[in-house]
Amino acid sequence: MKLAKRMFRREFKLQVCQEIDSGLKTQAQISREHSLGANLISRWLREYRQDSISCFAGHRHYQVDTQSVKIKELEAALGRATYENQILKEANQLVKKISQERRFTK
Image 1 (cartoon, rainbow, N blue to C red):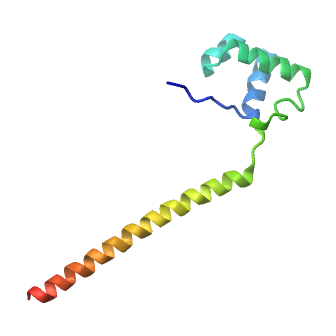
Image 2: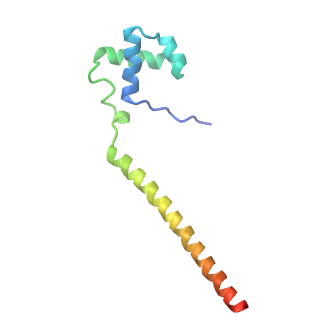
């Protein structure tokens, strides 16, 4: 079974690096607290120390396309609304059928 690859936001990486650099926490504490590997934290720190202003922004994984996120949210909402509409139509047909049956049985 393959585990899903975890993705971390730029803000989280910056926070982790700043906590380590400021001495608030050690690398081991951060590793245990967030279940992160030591190599991963070391790589983040290396990139952060090279260029703390533009680090973690150049990779395609970290660029958030807000339009595609919004489209996915809207598609999900449309799917839910379509499903609810279908259920309501079926319920309406059942109510009509039951009311017709009652009319004929009286």
